[in-house]
Image (cartoon, rainbow, N blue to C red; front, top):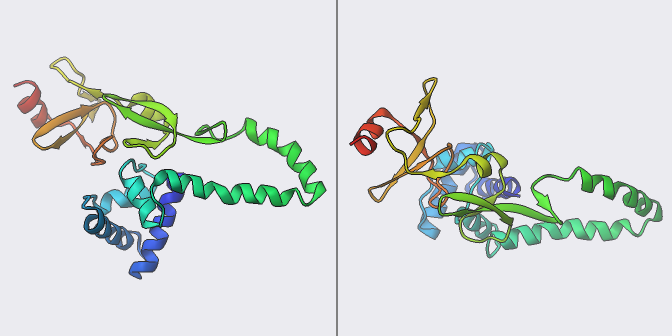
Length: 211
């Protein structure tokens, strides 16, 4: 659902700004969010969302939804599903289509997207040092379910024995906000402030961990 949210946000940004490029639309969005919601997000991060490299989390999902005219992300998810239900009602007017639908619906249910359960989109919510699966509601620190992030993204307190690099590639990522460092086991965005995490460096290790 966040992919659809981003698609519509960029579409509206293009219409309002008159810009055609992804970067131009991202810059317009970054400025709008900063001015209206006093929240800082870079155009680079917004571009990554548009390219589906990452998925936005709260509070950005709420800001995006408000930009589109909804109260919050939960309302966007709810309202966006309504046309699908109405289309289902129209199918019943045609008996043949209705019979075909009865045959196809069980098959669709079996092969349904893993992010849905009992007709509701699944999300995950940050709990202190890890994500937990939940049903999408627009709650704070909630984001769309991503299996890799759910299983592999953890907050840790690294020590001298922590494996920081493997084959020359970082195995730990960090964020520094308000002079406080936080470390995580996978790349992506910070689960609460939405900043893009940075790969660990020897300088950070020596200065803050092996001090």
